Length: 287
Image 1 (cartoon, rainbow, N blue to C red):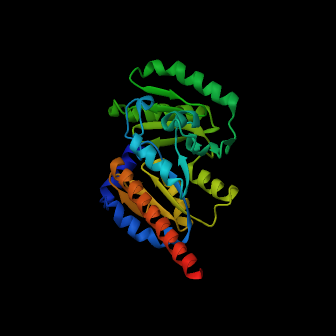
Image 2: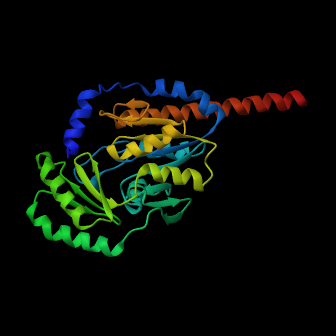
Image 3: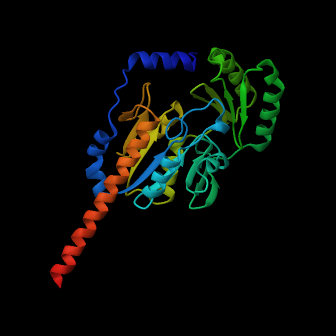
């Protein structure tokens, strides 16, 4: 079995990142933006928030939060994250936006909280105990116990990757209701069936968003399932950063995502102004 690092190295060697400017993507999207309602699915870490070795110390810039607040006057927004809903809500406070959390296991939509995947609570408690007992073997490993999953972070010590991967696989052998998700310097044990693509699909179907034009922006391996669904729906998929991807477009970094969102907002404002002017002319013509 190849390791996630080997897979990522192979991907990076096969694919030359081709970053394009935000306005180039938006120029291609204008016809869809003008003719459809839009739903924006947005990852958090590495997409609108810079990575931090300690996830609890990550932030979303106020400027980005304000842009997202204004965007929701024109479009629907759903944050899609590996963080729990509770963690994500702290990052966006004081706002209460739609969030698909824990890699699509839980959903808070229009303030209603639901689980999209069932959790074996008994096995989850046993898994936590197992990891807490074994973590003494990995003193430099940062263990993050979430509401529905457990993340093993080694961003500060990347040379531990193979050891942590072996440890995670050993956990899976004992707790088969869980599966492994590899991310940037992290392995996460999550309930089987929880993924961002399935969450996006369920949200679109359950909340009758089939006639909306979907956009998804993400940066990690866990976002690929989301890109696949968006591509199937003929929407817009955007990867942030390097690496092989199913996404149709690519932005370089978090600041470019913010620039994309800001320009997107200006396009929507201009469209709204144009419609108001046309309505004004039409009204006066009738009079």
